[in-house]
Amino acid sequence: MILLEKEKYGKLIEPLKTVTINNLFARSVIENHVFGSVYVDNANNPKTFYVAHPYGMSLLFGNFNNHDFNAKFRDYALNINQIRKRDEWMQVFPKDWDIVLNDLFKGHILKSSENTRNIEVNIVEINTRINFKFNPDKYIEFKQNNSLPDLKIVRTNEKMFKCMKGTVIPLNFWKSAEEFCKKGVGFSLYHENNLASTAYSSFVHDDKLELGIETAREFRGKGFAHYVCSVLIDYCLENNYEPVWSCKLENTGSYKLAQKLGFEPVSRTPYYRLSK
Image 1: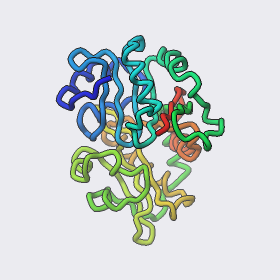
Image 2: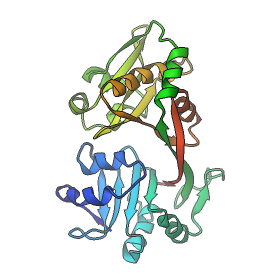
Image 3: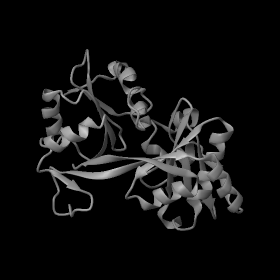
């Protein structure tokens, strides 16, 4: 398991095209839109890949029968040598990896419904990742039944990029405010002159734009998220982008908001939390 030099990230472009689950975050890393990490089995002719986004999402894909890589990855995933300083949330492709990991992590796998509070290290917790498909007709129906109130919603600029507080903020998905304003897009909602909620492109690749949303804690529960997301979705439709939404099943707020905005759940995949 080798940490790949950024100059060689291009070696992942073609293999990543074979991955059919949502992998826009991995593309952002290998296309150098954000600072992440890439591990491979062989620096010159890689067949097994692990891509980690700085926000904590990761993707394991490629050859699942690579025993040397798998043994080293087990130590990394269980954080045996305390290399990782934070949890990582991993998806895998193809599904054969699920069988391999079940054996590799035997004795260390827990379901999300089990109590992990007293187990702080060397665990892998299995959650569920939901991928949605945007339904324009359902979105139009939502718009017809939910007129936009008199709220101040403006295009997100560099100052707003730096000011937004929370965890799912543009700052965690882009190298800089300048890069975000040049290659991404966002809209910010103000309440009584306070920045309350921002919907933005966490990833943009080809004709796909994945939505990110954060509402400041003191402004939650007011319905701001679906209004500001609606403005971003309108932007997508006007500019021929397909809106993309994914979330953890256990994130009920995001799950319900997605469906309100016209997104339909289409697939469920295991979502592994690699404990720090």
